[in-house]
Length: 139
Image: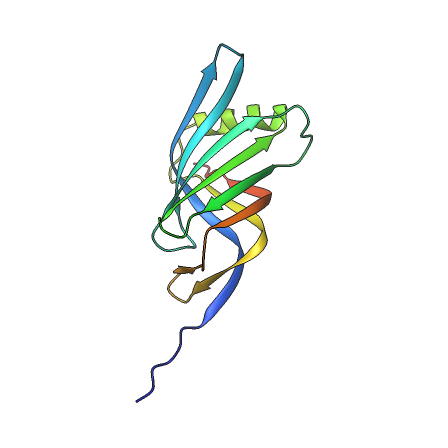
């Protein structure tokens, strides 16, 4: 009897659902940020903590980094948005939604995921976030 090896998909997008979002204002030195806790949708078992900050140097795009440790199921991401995009995101997150808000995080590299959504990595992964696609449910 032979054991079939798992089939892997190569993915560069990770879909996540917002669980908690907090808008933090730091009066000294006058900065603000959004801390978001997300549950993973397209990858089984895991979560992500995302820190989003406004950056005057970022125009109409999102940029950032994501760290995926090899020994824990908790990813961490840092994202910079242009000031207007940051303020729009704050506004959208303030409105109650009939179902969870989701985000698709696009990476600059591919990840190996089996048919059950289990992520397979040999060591920690540090990837660049190339784009974000938010979905805000309407009533």
